[in-house]
Structures are given as C-alpha cells and as structure tokens.
Length: 465
Image 1 (cartoon, rainbow, N blue to C red):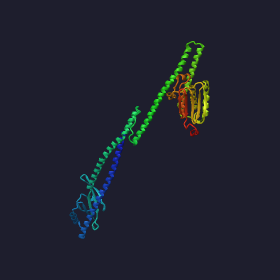
Image 2: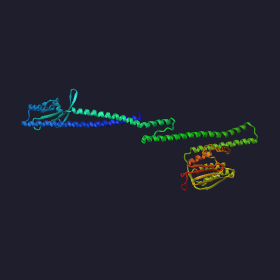
Image 3: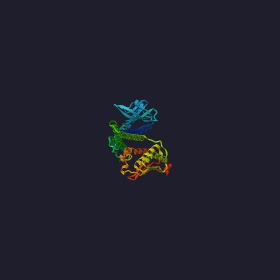
Image 4: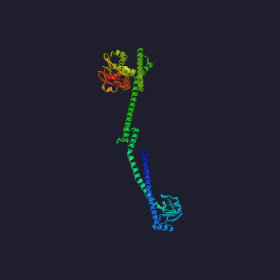
C-alpha cells in the first residue's frame, strides 16, 4: 500500500470517528432536551388536570363519586387521563392496565414506559398525582405519547448521517487528491534514486518547494553530488592505479630485459674477460636499480596505509643539516656546492619522513644541476625551500611531476638510476603533514621548490610571526 493511501485511510478514519463521536454527543444532548420538554409538558398537563378536579370538588362541596368522576373526565374529553380510586379503575380510555401503572408509578415525576402492541413498542411517558383535597385515595395519571419525540430523533439521526456522509466523503476524496499532489515529488525522488542506482549519476531531484519534501530533495541532491564526486574519484583512482601498474610494468621491463639478455649471453657465448666483466657490471647495476625501485614501491605502499603520525616539534636547522649531510657526498662527486642559508623556526611532524622528503628534493636538485653550480636550502617562518640553478622544468610539465613514474627527461633520469617515484613519495609525505608544495621553474635558469607548512604543524611563535 502506498504512503498516500495509508495516510488517507488513517485520516479518513480519524475524521469519521471524530464526526461520529460529535454527532453522538449532539444527538444525546438533543434527546435529553426533547425528553425534558416532553416531561415539562406532561407535568403541566397533570397539574392542570389536578387543578380542574379540585375546582370541581370545591364547587360540589364534597369529594366526587365514581359516576361524577366519569362524567367529569368524559366532559373534559381527555383520552390520555386515567383515574383510579384505590385499586379500582374509574376512568381509562388507554390500553394501559393497572399493572402497567404500578410498574410506572412515580409520584409527581414522569416515568418512561415502552408499551408492546402489535409487535411494535410505543414509548409512553406517565405522570401521576394525588389531589390533596380528596380523602378517598384518588390517583390521577396523565399519559403522554413520545412517538413525536422518537420521530424527531430519527429525523435528527438521518440528518446527521447525511451531513456526515455528504461532508466526509468529499473531504476524504479531496484529502487523497491533495496528498497525491503533495507526495508527487517523493515519487519523482524515488525515480531519480533508481536512475542513479542504475548509473545515471547526473540525475537530480527538483527542489521547488521549501517544505520538508523540498528540503529532502535538497539533501538528496547533496548526497547525489557526494556520490558522483566519490564515483569520479574512485574512477580516477582506478585509472591512476591502472596507469601506475602499466608504468611499473614498463619500468620493470627494461632492467629485467637487460639482466636476462646479459645472463643469456654469459651462458651461451664465450666472452673475453673484459666483456664478461662488462656484462656482470650491467647485471649488477640493473639489479641495484630493481632493488631501488622495489624499495621505493614499498615506501609508497607504506605511506598510502599511514593514517596518522606521531608528531614532534622539529628544529628546522637540525632537519636541514641532516638532509645536507646525507646528500653532500653525492653533490661533491658531481662538483656541486650544497649550501644552507638562513635557517630558523620549527615544524611539527615526523623527523624521518620529512628528512626523506627533503633528501628526495635535494637529490633532484643535484641531478638537475651542472658542475660548479649551487643548491641552496632555506627554512624560515614554516617554509622550507630547495633552490637550484640547473636546467629548469617546462611549465606544461610541472603539473605532472608528482605523478608516479613521470620523468621530464626520461633518458637522463634512467641513466642516473631514477624511476620517477621521488616526488610521488614527497607528495604523500606532505599530505600526511598537511603541508603544500609549490614549484617555480624557468628553463635554463633553475627551479625553486617551497614546502609550506600550515599553522597546525608550525610552532606558535612561527604562526604569530
């Protein structure tokens, strides 16, 4: 059963129940008023009858005998009056018996009696009185037919039932139509949900109204936006992983081919000692390259699984000196000067990870530089800068530098043992620290890489400066 049908049924039941209760209360009040009116009329008639009888007795100067009483009642022409002297019926034109009168005997108060006649009940109202001037136990009864009251109550019942049906049925129909119109956006929302579940992630619900349904549609659209963004991110991530695996396979192919080729040559060809040493040297160098590639891949996987860091306050001077000490032997072998300029402030983070990131950047700067040039390290106000005066990077290549296995000069990078994973590792380390990396480069003039740490990772003094 649909929701609008349930709401209509429940509301219709509540409306009909409330109307029935209200009609019942009104019917009861009306019945009480009609019965009270009939009682008052019966009591007045009884009082008039008693007054007429006492007046007649006063004129005669004595109590009336049975024949005189019979003449008195016939002369009045009252067919609904009953007169009894003791247990003797003096005058009675009704179908009531003495037993009926005894059952309804209530002094000066009306008593309701239902008389069974012809298979139907006739409601009667009987009032009784005893003249005070009479000393012969004379009792007068006045009978009132309540059929008019019953008829008026039946008409009232039929009228209430007609009003209830005449108003209730159109009200229920109108309620159903209003609910159908109100619930229509929910049906559209359900269709949009089915379409999104089927893969149409660009579908959105209409948000015309500002009621709860409209707010629900807005929340649904926000959820759909989040789902679409998540799906796009997952799709992009899947594409990146596919590309990553393709690049990784390609990177493995070159050293494995070289190792396999030289190993096959050593097995099948008789070489001179010099050629044999050269082949073994190639096998060794390519094996070391595979070892470095495997270690960097393990590093990337380790960083990808890292969710939180145990941070500490790190002195920037200590961090830069450690990185310089690690990279300086390689710089000296290539005739490059490694210098540390101004060094102040602290950052919060993992010392080993930041040392690894800074060493990667410094090694890249050394590779990009020529003999006689200088690589400069600087740290101040939460910013760490690595600057070189080397070959530089084209502007359209900068945005791709942090992609795994991406290399600007592939032939030179491979000849120097590179795999294009260094900046990917640096990017992941900085993301774990909430830091950002900015790259500025000019071809032929050099590159400046700036690591900007947020206030959450800097000391309070650095943030306030």
